[in-house]
Length: 132
Image (cartoon, rainbow, N blue to C red):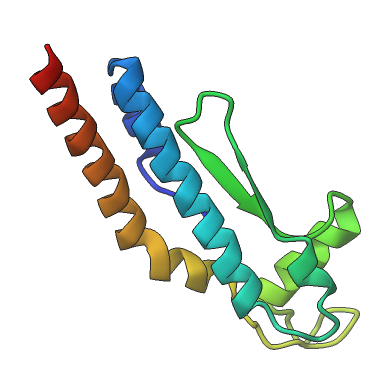
């Protein structure tokens, strides 16, 4: 899953208090969990092996993360990309129709993620302003 504008968001987040960062990091973690879970449900079930490799990880800053599919080897990554995007008829292994799962999960959860992060910022900002 790729979030556009994340570099600008990270620059702004560096200026926030630790309390707001903690709340936003929790929201991002929850969105990553939900995104990985949704991708596992949407992935084609040929053998189930690809679904088992879908995982997520948070960036050490806690303000971003990524969801990955496929084993860390080149072949595992290639398989995940081939299932997601398909293969042209002139490919040496033959044509394969695209069976997107990651892009559908991203589209389905993008608005929810954006609202979740905004809600976390508002909630933390209220808490910080009311306590000071």
